[in-house]
Image (cartoon, rainbow, N blue to C red; front, side, top):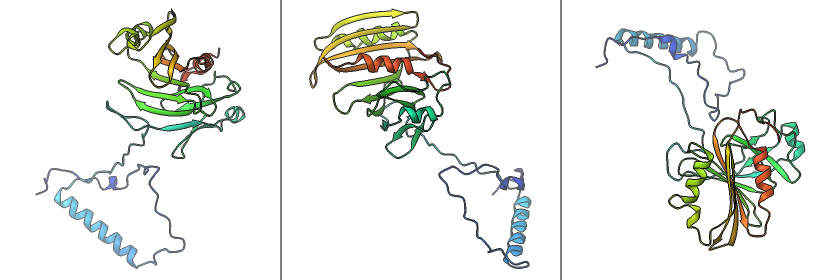
Length: 272
């Protein structure tokens, strides 16, 4: 039996909420109006009668709120999430006009018109500006392919060369300082110092950043060199940028360009 104490507000039937973008609105019928005195009036009378019956029974009528989850790039819980592949394809001219972007594999476009106003007008030659769906802008070598996976505490975005094995990895860190984060990454359980033939090449730090250059022996690709840089971004969030590749290849330039162009979405960043 329906409780008699529940009120009714017939006006909420006309919900003002717009349908989700992926839903198609009904197509209007052109020239197909209902003649006066026909089925339209009868349907109106039936609707009024139904509302009257509901009101008499004390049934509350509420608005139906449509919700959906558009996110394919993020996972709300720990564990492996779906990977997303993006190829940075914007040219310098397109970026300047706000029409370029990174093209997702499903055909959606990540545009560049949301760049921070303080970012350089154009990427360096040979680089493309990607407004990453994770929430930042970064310049990466043209033709490098993006992949996103769920890490222990955040999304890990990798931009990888399709030819020579070099990669850029970007992710948030949860430690209190960049130095603490890098020390844990090096010396904690499963840290860098446990890698085969691990050797520190350089170590440096500042008030809001810490960097470790090292090499190790990868069982698949051989001697690998890495630049691991942890820093506080313009919005106060701690991030890591790791540039790596086979020994003898340039991993410093992609790292420097990525660091100098990195800017969280909505933040005010100073160009180098």
